[in-house]
Image (tube, rainbow, N blue to C red; front, side):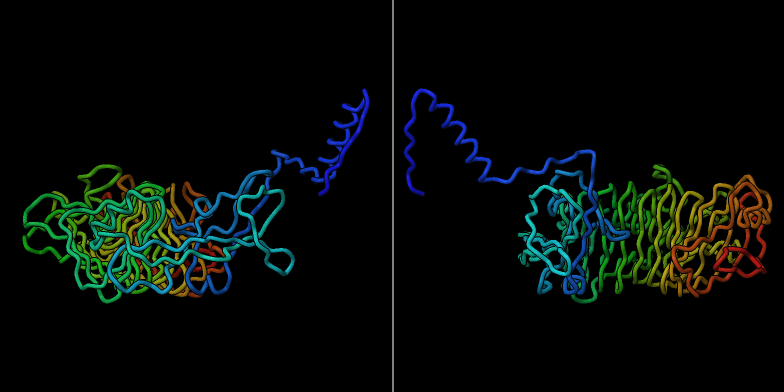
Length: 461
């Protein structure tokens, strides 16, 4: 631009300021004023290639996060808030702790095309966005080669990590407490993680305790948690469940994972009572979430008996859930776990759901026996495209009900409740749920259920 010389007289100063103001106005478009009373929905997507590679939002499990809402004029939260991650490419083969890939570039959808997105731009309208490019580091965290080291490291982080096991056995001697971010454990070959303790010692605690709303543990392919089936004394060493997940945390099992051979003398945890006898030997859910997408929970036993040498009916061999916990079973199998056989078949529950807990059955999950606490404050079973089987569904009433027939009235909704305990999330599916027993805890009254269950309505016919 050439120099412009302006000659002016006494009124020239006002003219200069007028010209400068005109110049600034003509060189920039006026910015749209943001309205803080408005908000805009941001839709989150992945490319088909990223979906195939297992990319995900919202590491803490449950339904994938697909939208978020931003106040007009606000800034997208970046990956820390969007939480988009993808496993390293190629997947690591050496044992160690690895970070997930994170997006380094984003794009937004305009019509049928995708255009580069400035992630720091103010949000003034609805958007559909997805990662365009990812970081690609497969460098292991230095000095971390054991499961104990992996848990300790993740507890100091705010983002999820993958721990790859290339050996055959990892043995730990004390409970592992995960209370930081997320940990995915994957085995490149069949790998066992076991908790050992000296015979006759006190409660060892859970193999893994996962606590807090930012904590998540995923068991991946080729990972077996093995309790060693501690039968070294007539009364087994008191152990907690293999997994104790609490305080809003999430535990997920995927295809190829297994929990087996845990024997508990009560899970050692109930309503913050570390000495309680309720619970299960494999997974105890306390105000948290358990997602089973695949894998197997088998050959676990809750060996607790009361002062009369009777098993506690409010317990399970495999999975116990309480305190508004959520159990989402959509794949894999939970079979051949037991409490005891002295309460006929009503006492051999694989899964026990208390009256303040939510159970979802979906896809092809296979379960031996499920017991529902059928009280006036009952919970529901949600069926969502359920094609699997439940070999026996038992309905239990508590210590205030003297007869097992009360379980039927609670289930059918005719006494103090709002309706049947079955609901559908979409399509119920064509799976099979066989009714087992009504039983009352007060008198250990047991009645076999002769009716069949209508999956669409939840009614017994």
